[in-house]
Amino acid sequence: MRSSGWRLGLILAVVFTAESYRRLQLGSQTTLAGGMNASRERTDFSDRLFQELGQPIVRPVSIALQEVQIRYWLDRRFMVRSRMDAWTRPC
Image (cartoon, rainbow, N blue to C red; front, side, top):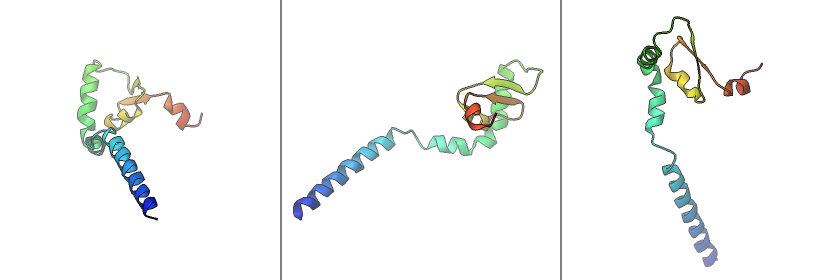
């Protein structure tokens, strides 16, 4: 029985170490905070992008991006198109 307890402890230590290593590679917690603050930063971000695009007359401005998360940072002046839309919305 003693050897099985020792083995279990070793296995748990290995799993804990591997999980801790993997979690450290996931990125910082600031990405969560950035997503939570997106609604407050939406107008500023949208204004900057609108200026960079030369203040287009036709609205909404349709932009194609792979990262659909940018929708959180853009206001109604923008329409984000993505390949993911075809997978998440019925045709």
